[in-house]
Length: 211
Image 1 (cartoon, rainbow, N blue to C red):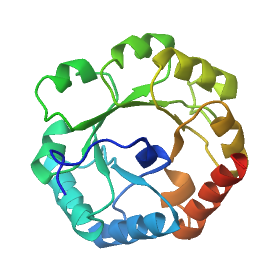
Image 2: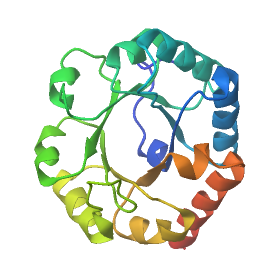
Image 3: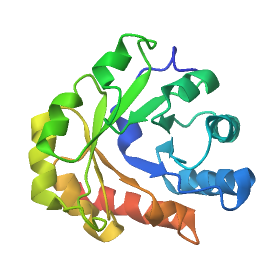
């Protein structure tokens, strides 16, 4: 399954599990990814900013091997994503824009973009979806958007929007009601002692919010 044959599906955004580190080795990270998918994660985003491109590609190839039917996006490195046959890239918007990248990648290459302030919305043009946040739990020096702020930026973006930042099972319902196509999490799943159970709880909260 390669990026030139698989069309983007909004259902991939339901629960994006973002990797945290390879502190337990590639095998350990892969095992946690498998558990996350078992619990209901619908996409894996490979984010390892401290790792060099060669190591990132090695991890990506392993994830493609153990989860061949699960969409895989690589953070920031479109070159690595293309080299390993990942489904796409997620851009932080501090360098290349989705519109610029779109001119040189395959038609079905998925591009996600991070949006945190109003100015980011225009720069995200051309992305398949926007990951908007931090909604809750902002780091020092950041302002949390809150649910209302998320809803406002999602409306301005106009396409599928994913909520990120302090997302937990307890606050998922409000985000889905605010127009989120899904949520993205790092610590809530990949740092949980039971990644499958953590993902399952988030999915259950999403399902409950729509009944």
